[in-house]
Image 1 (tube, helix red, strand yellow):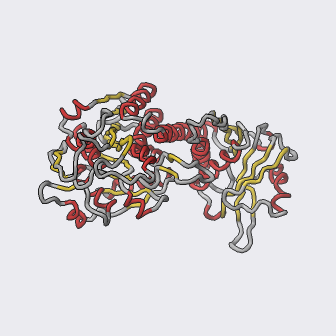
Image 2: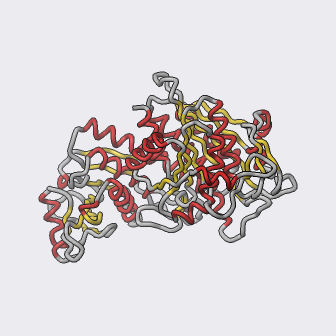
Image 3: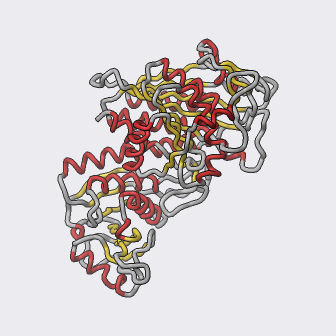
Length: 496
């Protein structure tokens, strides 16, 4: 999607559709809608539909006017943003996605979006609109034979301000939006097309296009590295596993800090011998969303060029039941030397991440973040709204929290109290890979903490947010690309 910036007067801009935001400045009982612009021609064009109550400012409400008087735009879309007092870049991002989805359904190919004049920082508003537009432009109907060619080809942002500064904000948002959608494309693929080998090849191609170094290792190297936890999951599948290492090493960056991004890349999860129920198992193609997130984040960082060294690691395999698969009761030796009693073969994501985290430390990473569709327990705790965040370092968490807020993604910190460690003690080995039913998201994180050790570390459990369970006004049902924006903001912050 082409993006550009315009400093034109809104009424003088020729476009297929001009989009403006309406907010409600009233109280609960008495709405007071108003479009957020000082342009007199635009306010005059919207006056009648506001006066007759057709426009109320309610979130995602759309009113489309054709051939509006005194405007060069062919259409005017007035889209509601909700209450003015709570309107922020978070809401604006979703409003932009909703505008794109509304217009592309009408086979409109381009639009101009007017930055609302309600006191938002203009740079932040530009970023939110572009990022939201990319999210709204993605649809998952890749393999439909009658797929409709509905998409927005070009978005123009209409704003007042320094052209150079706003242009830089727009370009950064374009890179992040494209990278989030790149992640979504990977997650959307069926597992017969997105095998571990295919996922690794997509990472290799991305690195070649973006100027990153990329190494891909197979089963023999995984065994040579003594990644017993990773291999224990991979051994049950006929598909070969892949260990992907992506390196972003700008010459002007100091040797430290070095950020390690570790992603779970289970391209299909049957549960192994502890097999899952059939109902809903088709969705388990998304179990590589953590790995795809790290590939998307590395793509964005390579193009944004912050002054920080980053290594991305994806541990990719299938989790399958077979005569070669590991069994409950087996004991595996992780790369770190820790012994693991396998209680549940469906708790496989933490096994591949255990070796990925330890390997990242071996490669010199001073700070670690992993992302994974790790536990159904996190979905029970937080639903489909917030991802779970765990941290062994408060300073690193607070830094991430600020980045997450700028990125406009919803996440919630969950505890890592030492008492939970009792749930993962084993009688025969150092630890078990499943702490039981209660506090399952926490005990899974406690397992991973054993392999991060004293390295500052964050764990993102994105099981409930990596896949949208239904269509929303601003985003299609399917992969969400959660955490790409937050990771990029965090890395930029670390780079100063």
